[in-house]
Every structure is written in structure tokens, then in C-alpha cells.
Image (tube, rainbow, N blue to C red; front, side):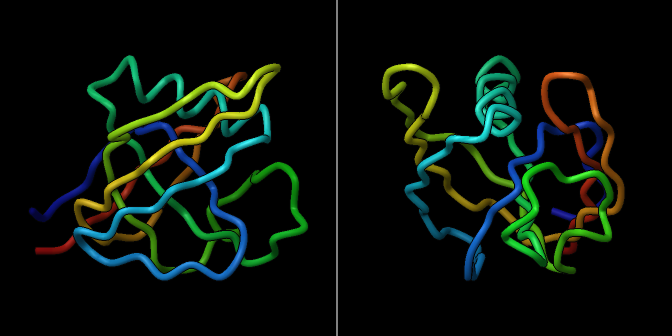
Length: 117
């Protein structure tokens, strides 16, 4: 798959992540903006953009420059609500790419992702 994927919900990842095609990650998601991105992806064929934050202390991503060069496109393959907000999600990486632009939507962040073959 190559090209540009437009307007996908973005899940910013904090911590030391390595993203590889076919990898499955179990994620605890607590930030409201990230929870809303997962919920939005569930309504959009479970597609989601993954971006790794340069600084894990940043609470709200405002610019694509706050993300590392490597990003990914994946699918939510499972999730569970954990009470008053947090979600546990299982994400499968479909392809590696680069987040080229982000767009605040009010509830979550959407992203454009450039993917290679």
C-alpha cells in the first residue's frame, strides 16, 4: 500500500514504541482526546493513525512536528471500556508511514498519513 491516507483519527502514543507491520499492541488509553479518537475509529471501519510523541509529557498534541518521523496506520481489533473513561484497545499495525498533518476536530485529532509500499 502506498499513497496518502486522509483524515484518520490520530492516537498519539507516549513512551518507547517501535511500530512494525503486523505487530499487535495492547494499549491503555486515558487521555480524553485519545479515547475519543478510538471511539471515532470504531465508527470508521476501525481505522486509526498512530503517531509516537517526541515528548511523552505533552498532554495535547497541537502540531505534527510534536510527533516522531515514524508513524503507522492500523486497525482497532479489540477494545474494552474501563469505567469512567479509560479504554483498553488492541491495535494491529497495517503499514508504516509518516504523519504529515494533523487537524483538531474538537473532540479528537485527525491526521493525514503518508504511507510507503
